[in-house]
Amino acid sequence: MACFALEDVLIKALAAALPIAQILILFGAGGALMFAILARARDERLYSPQVLYRPMRIRVVFEILGRLFYVLAIALAPLSSATAILQATPIVVVAGAAIFFGEIVGWRRWAAICVGLIGVLIILRPTSDSFTIYSVLAVLGMLGFAGRDLASRAAPASLSTSILGLYGFLSVIVAGGLFTLYEDRPFGMITFDEAPYVLGAVICGVVAYGSLMNAMRTGEVSTVTPFRYTRLLFGLACGVILFHETIDLPMMVGCGLIVVSGLYIMWRGTRLGPATP
Image 1 (cartoon, rainbow, N blue to C red):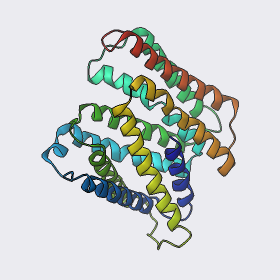
Image 2: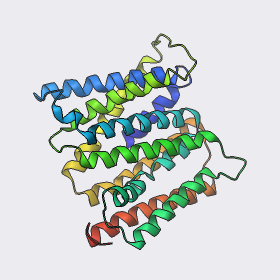
Image 3: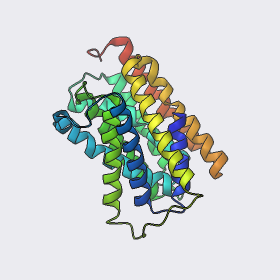
Image 4: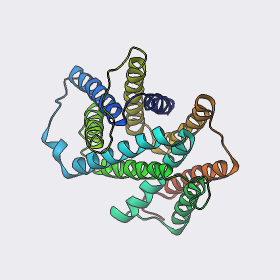
């Protein structure tokens, strides 16, 4: 989670100097190359018919949407608010699992889902003067990542973390290519000052992705999941210290509702089992 937060910081810093589409393409290419090297070092095939299975195709689409909109959010909106909204992803995943996979979610967890979404609205503050459309980009990014996580549940278990990472980062390249159709900024040469930011973002992204996937695949979900919310602490700290953002009371209330509802949903599901509401 710390590496994810550092990745966000480096991308936000790069967005002040480079086109967002170029950042996405460079980030995606660097991450894909690193995961390809890791896969080949483990004698894994970079392509198999399984990567074209329907869940993987759906996963790629949502990965593109999630990456594109979230990078736009951290580039254009405060890092702290974008990070806070992203924490609603596990809540939306539970709701999506109930709707699309038929998992049983009782009224208590549905109530917690509603509380978490209310927390997102409090952070957005759509009726206040401080509301900006850029914050909606974080919501769209969060929904994209939730869709990716849902599709990952149906992805072939035989695909390794390296292969999932490879195709995940290839999706980022596609996201950058698509955004070039909209962004009216020419690509520029990478300077010696910018190169460490690009390399740092790629390394942090690969380490973060690989660590999270390994933790979720090898550790108990009930043990690992609560630590995902530490990204909120890292993101808020980076926003305040590095970008001089302010954390007001509504932001704190919204963050609290999202985290508490997410932890309750996880605790309730673990306590009662997947087939019990």
